Image (cartoon, rainbow, N blue to C red):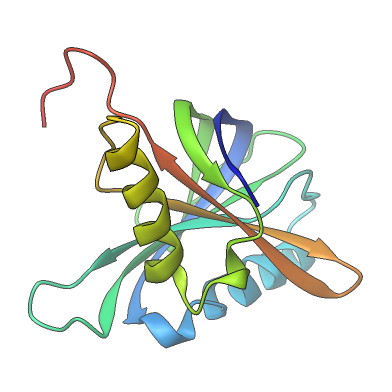
Length: 152
């Protein structure tokens, strides 16, 4: 699949942060789906997540999951879930169906190589968008582009 430039924009999201082994990346997805059953909310877009590797252990990291919903909601201040009005990445390189790669890092490396070849500066963050099609997950990988004047 070709790499494209696109934004990533959603309104009304629930977020969930967990530290876990990267092999367990689907666990947060299941937690988000279970949340729907206990609240009067409806998912209206794909669940997506970002991953930041732990400093001391390359096999573990922090996952932040995002789930677009139909309306705003209020959660406890110190609970596991938080509400976000809007999520926006203005410009990103996108690799559709990144699961064709052996893992997220291989897909991320493919996007980074493309960016280097085309002199595009990327941020260190990437987002995996989980698209459920006929009971299977397809993954789109979004890597934000550093804007001119971006200070890292």
